[in-house]
Length: 83
Image 1 (tube, rainbow, N blue to C red):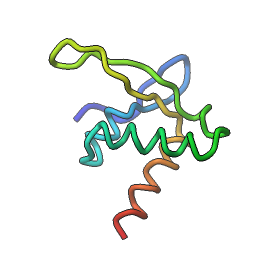
Image 2 (tube, rainbow, N blue to C red; image 1 turned 90 degrees about the vertical axis):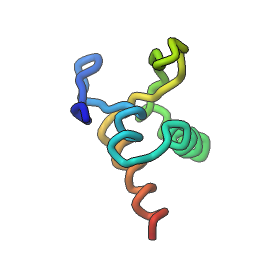
Image 3 (cartoon, rainbow, N blue to C red; image 1 turned 60 degrees about the vertical axis):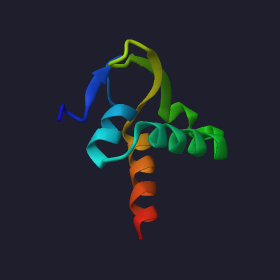
């Protein structure tokens, strides 16, 4: 597993891809969780920035970068859904 935190635009962030890998989730489900969070509260949109990545099939696909607050909010949601 690669490092969870990376530097982007002089800020410590992580990506939806790394979150999916770390927490054993499907990436499309992580994307959906992020989109649900930001749809419910537009003030959260500054915690998540849309980006893209190149898949193994050479397709450009969406992903999100998130700051510490966005990561915390997202992961807490994963924990509470287990209970």
